[in-house]
Picture 1 (cartoon, rainbow over the protein chains, first blue to last red):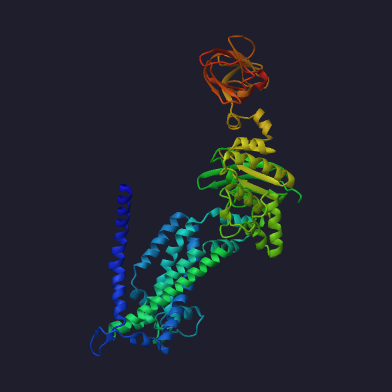
Picture 2 (tube, rainbow over the protein chains, first blue to last red):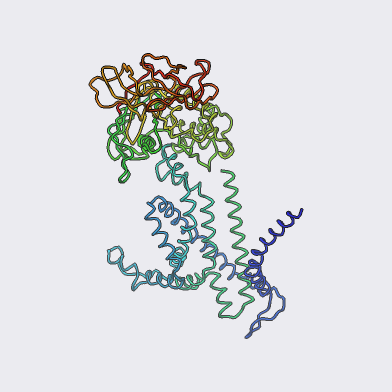
Length: 285
Length: 352
């Protein structure tokens, strides 16, 4: 009896640490934000503690609703592109000799250390009319005159995918490295060419990892607020840009908080739906 | 039953960097027979199997299946079925889908695939599990699924890489018998890689003993057991007594402080030979009765395993092991002085 008590006390202590950490670093700030989202903005001032639903009501206008859909769409597109490039890349990486794999992984980690601003401006130079890649195409004779490719939606996607690519590869690398090579070889002996093996064995086997990587990139790009401003036109500004604008430049913290919470709820809802759907398909297969 | 195809390996060599895994192997694997590649780990047997499957490209040499040169043909067009050591079943597919995977790649319709999967499950005596998940099967059942999958496309050659090593002893023996019966029924040319000499002996038409990347000896199991060409083969196939000796005349070898008549001693051999005598051929006579091919020794250890008794006898230069059934021989005990007879017919002379 005594020993059981002591063990229960130990377990409680073990739980206490993560609970306190989560509480102070996550739940309390989130709670403050939820509360602020119901406060009222004072014109020319900060906000007053009067409960109101105005902030949420304001959100349900065509402008913000469209922007929400656009933001989700851009993030979904960026996630799809990042996984579409990242998965074959990670697969081929695991098939390389060990001495090549490590430098490439280190290089990817280096990319992570670059700031979003630097990456954004680099892409804007690369895609510009005066100094960009289109000049190379002109030089090669593929293009008549240099063109400006930025700002544009494609430029925003380039920037977002570039930022998300290392995460995609780093999430996909461990499960791909653990993949039993004999399974791939078994498919080969059963008449599947390498590309067929990849499509019918490697991809379906790693569906959970692919879903995880896509969800990560989706959530990650949903929060990006610099890249759309640097590489996009105002119509390409995502909800995160508008939140920053409200919070920092309009000093409307209650409305910014309401938008942020709405974005988080919708984003998490979509992620949960994807995970449930993926599990269902996983069981059916 | 499809007509069987033989496999020929001509001067096959495989080097990984500075390491030579397989060195200049010439081998004929007869059509419709079961051949085992037997050897210790690192002897090159798995590499040789993978070369037949096309999973490794030989550094030099040629692979032929049914007379056709397939050296440059990729695995997926080679028409081989393979059972892998890890079994390598697809975890995202059901049992039936695993077996029918090759048919699906070929574009066979779903109904025909289901029929064929059921047929193959009957063949491996595992009916009615097509819709189960692979993780719901036991080790032995997965083994059968892997065999069924490898046979689904009616391959020209059936290859198995240590297929039974993960099973427990009892199940392994059952599967050996079953696999052999299945192979004989289908008449398919089959290669099994194994390090278990008992498995190789009991299952195969032809045993290929490999060591250090080369074929040490190839032949029917009993021929290899009775006439090993060197000490490596003699030691690897069954246990044996290896006795250093010196030829003293025609069919005469001096060893263990005595003289032995060895009918198989090659003429014109000088220097040294090694005599190989199987433990079950060694005869122990209690007390000291002299005679042909006999020397004296002292019993050092007796190991009674029930069905047989192993007796260790220290002779002049070596310890001789004798194996006998308990009712065959008089009981001896540690410390007894005995006479050891190595019958002339059982003495095999090997290069020293």
